[in-house]
Length: 438
Image (cartoon, rainbow, N blue to C red; front, side):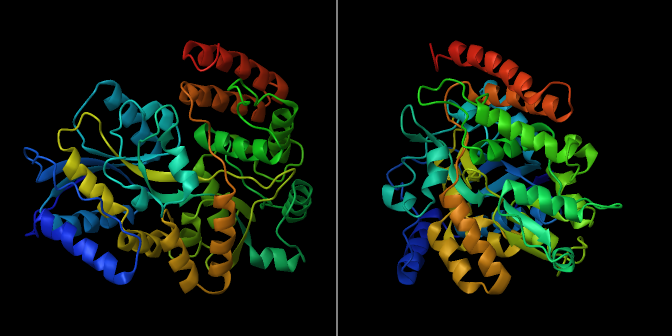
């Protein structure tokens, strides 16, 4: 899907000046790092972007963004839209080919390590003062620890909440599960007939994300302090066994959960097939939309259930500059625009995406009330205590191996221990080949 816009516009210098004046008068954290000394780029009044989409609201959102950006800067953004998985796959292909087709990429903390050689460092476009307003966990996940270079800037934070059917829970005198044992108990009490107490993803990257949460909650981790594989520890086996047992032993989740990714996971909750789901911030908007979800007006939120810890992932959608772009300064202006305070407020209002700037997160939380205020408050705690995949050479390949291992265990092709041990052997080989370990 492609879009483009060509209305009349302010000059870029006017845009930078007015933006700084506006932020200064509002008392906000300064946003823009001026690059006035940079030499003009040939053809920099037009750039190309590969942007993320998902659902019918995204195309008009991006069209509005590029229209306003053109009006304020004079820069036209031609853009293509792809959903998350094909987006990252295309970026990997284009990066390997050193393609300059796109100047700007939507990206994500997931597998960001694979992109460190292919994304332009953003350090010269954002000062320390600029970056101080972004959640530290997101910046850490997007920074190459080998050289301290920031590969992308977070656009919105992603961490999961427990969404539950308030009507069903009230009818059964239940509260959201706080522990793994309670998750089993509540799930059993709400499972019956054509309804399940819980729904989980079980395929691809979503299955690995779910395993990661259970791994951390069990007290385990992906790698040890020396970057050796640790996910097949007793804690890792416990995590994957619990994951499998929710589907196979306790039968509180649909048996075909092993084929679900995010869309199927969410659909089972919004269509009232399952009473509980672990989902991202955008779920708050979609589950409350009466035009598309049966759950509107009858769902609540709570933190995820915990075990030895309550740790969950804290990740981020982000924006990056293609290292092979010839229009990096213009690309940086568009990226700064997409993470400006006003853009993040609009993004929250449109999608309920949690802002990547701490000041804007405080702003939207302060303006919220009741259930929404509780959700935002809980979510911030989850984000600030959250973790992300290791950013070491070869971990993008490790993650693919673990996806297959998790799916093998969930489908009873291998025991959890056998699946993780086999994955650990292959991942150790990968990490040695990449020079991460000896």
